[in-house]
Image 1 (tube, one colour):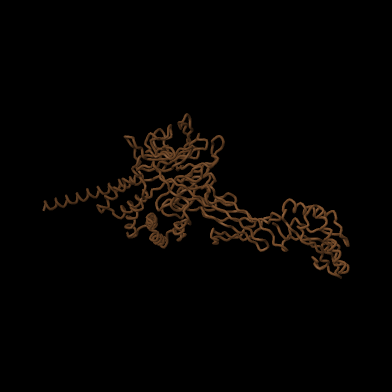
Image 2 (tube, rainbow, N blue to C red; image 1 turned 120 degrees about the horizontal axis):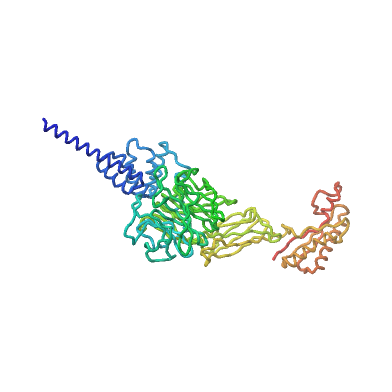
Length: 638
């Protein structure tokens, strides 16, 4: 009996020791997780699952580890198990949907997102569920960006490429060539440093290519941006002092933006900026085209959620204004970051809160008439993928640039990708009246290809302006029509033009149809009662016509029509109108107008009154005056 009891006690002790062992293991895993050591935490959670200890919890934590490590394939494998658990928090439906999206399983992703919503989950207004046709539209859009090879990637994380004066500055955790490496707990890779290589360089980049001076520390440094004069650098770095990380109230080390000055080819005089704080992160610096504004990413209070993009003005003495959030068109409840401003003032950024292809996607912004941001647009494939795509920058030429991605097919973790861009090409112009040079609104614009196939059709706006997207390396014909004018057309080509060119101008002139439109400059002239002599005011108008026909339109042909009021006999008025036509004709000929350019000068008597002042009608003298006139009709322009 005693032996039996002894055995039972031993078994109980062994079970108790095993249980305490597993409890300690879970505590260790949670500690690693809370310290963002996700690689090590995942290993311990796997052990807990293998030992069937608190398996549901460990599986959820393991799936979250892989989500934080931006590994949707592994995360999805474990989330698939998690969502089958009883009473699982509904947030895991959303997490599973996101991981499926990262694997390009868009239909399944939509199903689980719908289940999340049906279970009471709330998605923000920019969630990818808002447009079920988004994926099709992005993959079906005309490709504008084309990828080029980059020779300096490593098996570690490389991102944040920024081109300046023929050199590329980028952040990397490679630390190749160094015997002792300090590892970052989140992903078990070395800490980031700033490296420099030549544009187009093909050789490997090791520790000898690190930025010279005080930029690189024992913690994370980079990415960077540099002023146009090359003298000032803004860069991200972990918050630390005296080689010790500074923690916030939650025990986390945040990021800060620092400023460095180039002195004797060395970056030095490191300055902690006023926008930084120990209690939140400030990182991803970007400058506008004239270095007067600093854009950055921050999770500071007052944002829309996650991390937002903010901006400050830079004064001439280097001081900064208070940060301003750039607004909810760009920022969402999720994460926005890595801002970049190109030479045209367009903001690019990364986000997992706007409609995208997977995890982080790269977006551009669209501005309104008052230069305010009114919308964002996904850059599409191949810039974006179902994985993380971020740190987009563009070279000064506006055609080439870089971004980073952890998509399959790269050399390591995050890789830098180069691109060349073929900008959208447009034909644009203004349709103008050939006579008075005024724009013609609502003109019909028709674009044809070289085989006379119609490929576009639109109306000009109130300013006579039109703009149509066209393909490169094509021949075109564009036709302008308006019911009161003769059609005009132009042929043009988009072949052999510079890639940087984005606009071809094709203005069109419309001539009025004969007998329909009177030239604005060919003003009607008037006569005194029962007279046919040219008055002084009429002579001034006739001189304008002489100038128009002599200098502006030397091929123009006109016709003269003269009239009387209704007073007097019909036959008398017929003769009087002929006399007025003759006087007008003679004046123009005396001023040098070729008689061949006046097809006829004819009198119509009182047959074409402009108002109701007929025989017997009571009209004021001013009303009768309107009928004693000579008008000019354009017969031919050229």
